[in-house]
Length: 202
Image (cartoon, rainbow, N blue to C red; front, side, top):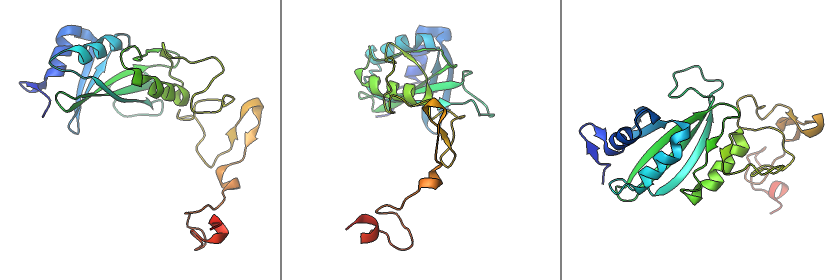
């Protein structure tokens, strides 16, 4: 079943615009998907409405992901350095909707854990890898989520060194570059020995 429409617009877009006005900053249609760019502070209200409205019922939280636009020179939908993109799904209509909010470094994004318990881990992943703080979902002092507790920095930020470059560790020490310690492993094509006993021990 396709998403319900009102003329040329999706019903979700019409309803959110009518209820939240200027909190809906922009609507973007791209590759058959709809993105609602909303005010960061109003995000929980908008999501709660999309979930509870009987005509919409976006009651499944699929995921949220982060994006760092600090090194992006093309057109943008929102102005902050970071964007958090939420993927919601309506089981009633078998349709997907994306919401986008932006934040600059240090600006907290309201957590959706109070609306969808499934938002806890994806938010903490974005927090751990980008440094975007979700108000109401950590960070716990001195604790990382995916990374070791003593890890320095946020590895998905654009300024973070790529593989193959020396990595700065805690206490100012530097780790070896990837190519300095590259080792063959089972399943890797290396001098024609893929899967052989010399590599895999089998």
